[in-house]
Length: 294
Ligand SMILES: [Zn+2]
Ligand SMILES: [Zn+2]
Image 1 (tube, helix red, strand yellow):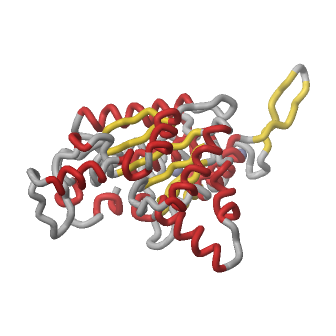
Image 2 (image 1 turned 90 degrees about the vertical axis):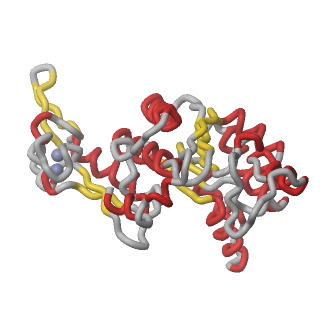
């Protein structure tokens, strides 16, 4: 809740909240100490404002802050990327500038009462695709109070499988994701691509699409084989002239990974944006340190 009065806070820069990064736990936000005792309402949660000759009680903006923090804490942001925001996103190429603009436009124009087209970021790992997914969810939660969820698709599938052994149906797991205003699905296409896996994905995204709800995606797979400059399978040496290479390169595209039906659904739901590092950023970093320091 930035206002000129508290913009001087060195802790939160006037935002009123801080995001904590704790190993092994989803990202959590908390009220900054500058907001601990609300100067406007004296902790009652209400302010008295003049209205037509008398005074009426109005919900203080600090109550919205608590609600927004609670919404943020439900997203499920992995600890390694807890601090990801539009402000901490570092771009160094036209791809980065374009992708950030798409993600920011999505967040700023998002309305709960009108269908909004999502976005899908694709390219090799290390360019900041996850960062932008999380930044959009964070901004919507903390600035607008709009709920979102973040899932890695493979982990979601594991949760569904684990649920079966506890006699829970796939719907028990998916239902939390069907109606959330914004859902971000990361690592799309990394799954094996079995019929069952595809049916889970199809059910989830088709229901959301039919309800007019926005879904965001990130994938390490390219849309066409010619876009993928090198196959970076550890321990594999590809002969780019061999028929095997052509077949494998085709199999490594997003349409092949998810199937034509889901791919065309993704086209209806999303703006596709390429975000490729050009070279692998993670190799330039000392481990995953960047996000932990951000
Ligand atoms: Zn503060
Ligand atoms: Zn207050």
